[in-house]
View 1 (tube, one colour):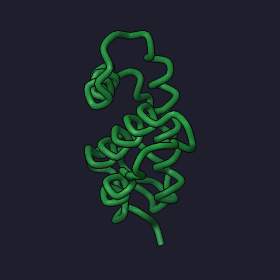
View 2 (view 1 turned 135 degrees about the vertical axis):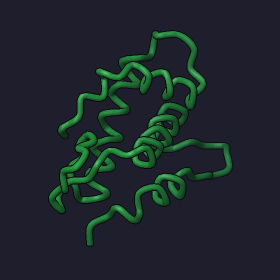
View 3 (view 1 turned 60 degrees about the horizontal axis):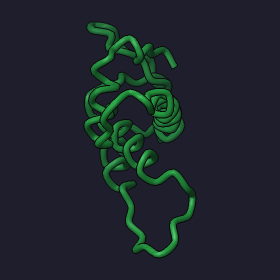
Length: 110
C-alpha cells in the first residue's frame, strides 16, 4: 500500500464514531483493523490503493483511495470491531457485506 492513513487523525475519529467507541483505549486494535480492511479492499479489487494523485492517470493495477472506498473500509472496521469472533451462537445471522460489496463492486478488475 502507498498510504500513510495514520497521518490523518480524523480517520481514526470517524472510525470511532461509526463503531460507537469513546476513549483511546482501543486505538491500536482499530489501527490493526484498518490495515486489514485496506488489505482486504486491495485483494477484493485486485489493485493497489494509492492516495489522491490529481492530474495523474493511474495504471490499471492501482486505484485511488476515494471517499466511497474509505466508507467500505469504515464499514468493515466497525463490523469487525462489533463481531470479533468467527462464529456467534444464539443470534440471528446478519451481514454487512452487501454495503461493502456495493461500494467496491465497480472497482474490481476483471
